[in-house]
Length: 481
Image 1 (cartoon, rainbow, N blue to C red):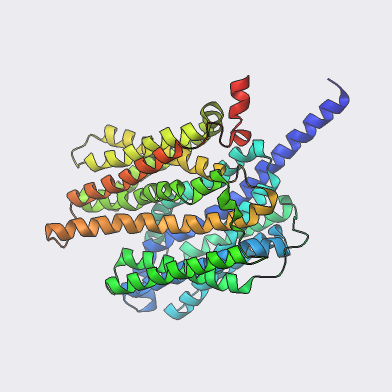
Image 2 (spheres, rainbow, N blue to C red):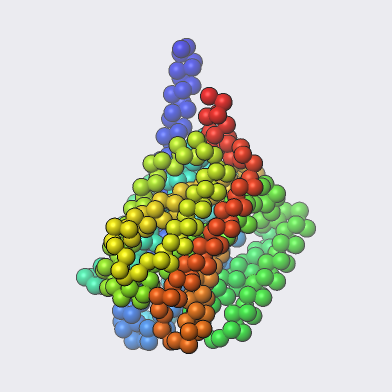
């Protein structure tokens, strides 16, 4: 081997290490962001008592965070291109961390809501801009590992958050659910300054302000309708009105983006089959089904089985271990089988494991329950990593910013849609029984319905070409060797 070849291999190895480090830095910030979203709900009663308001009034803290985040997500890609992804990512962490401090120090509901809105704005920029940074620093051969690293916070934080939040609220105070973000945020900003290189587009163009207003309003109304449908506040008409407004505004935004020379969001990414299928069509349906599971499981264990929150948490830890354990084999499986087979077959396993949860009863042996939850966690982790990686497998450099923003928008919709669908089935089932309280039979229907959605979406992935995303997974090279 010549000196030049050795030097080239050494440079490739160094670039690979740099891509992993950047992905880890982004993952730390993502974990803080997602953990905050799941940890807050556990302390709402204590916060209500501290602010001297009714517990139901505290839901505005979650709602305003979600709506502010929805409003600013469409702007994230353009800001990253205009001011540099590293700088915008750093600012987003700083805004989120500072707002967390003031949320923890709030003395009234009004103060809390204002700081929570600012926190949502910081969160809106963090995910899409962080993903842009990873995409710009990782070569296609490194994309699976890089995406897997930034996917694990979304898999683990929703499971760890409620347990950690309950522990902090019980043994410390609700303030620390927000103050815990301060050291994580400071560490995250330090890591960004140390390891993330600056990259920006040479000419991002002027801000498409009208497109921003339309897309932000459309996404906000859609997510507000889904959130309202889960809590069922105000009846059916407000939900339908907001849903209709969201759909109309989204259609107007789409028509505007297609007709404008320099749109805020470049919709040409949807012409790429791998991106379209993994984010918009089958991908949204698959995410909706899988996202319903962390919502349904704690309710099943506590309301259906009558377990305490601690006992329910032990089962969720098994689910979390399944999510975590899959990471070591994600890359080899994609290399051996390819995206089409993994998304199709693993998607079926994930969907069938959801359906299998409908057969669980308080008398089910713990061994079988643990095995099923572990399998559900394994398949969930594999499916999300494969979806998130395939989405950007064939996206060109000019499409990255818009593709990342569009992906973030659709993931937010699928997260709330999963909860909304599950909650709707629970409510319909209990209403048909003429009961006010949820029973085990209601959960069975919910698991069956969302599992069926997962089965249908998994079969859709089998329509992908055999070598879809092969440049990223290495599947074609494996077959040739």
